[in-house]
Length: 53
Image (cartoon, rainbow, N blue to C red):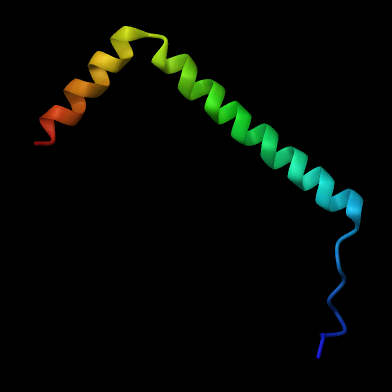
């Protein structure tokens, strides 16, 4: 039985949410790839990880 307060989302709302999510994922990936283009960042990250052990 479906509650009476439940309203399914419209197609427009679903596609806007999906596009927004995809843009957020792409922004995060672009940021990560941008950091990997800086070698000093990778050296610093490796040093920080090494100090944990």
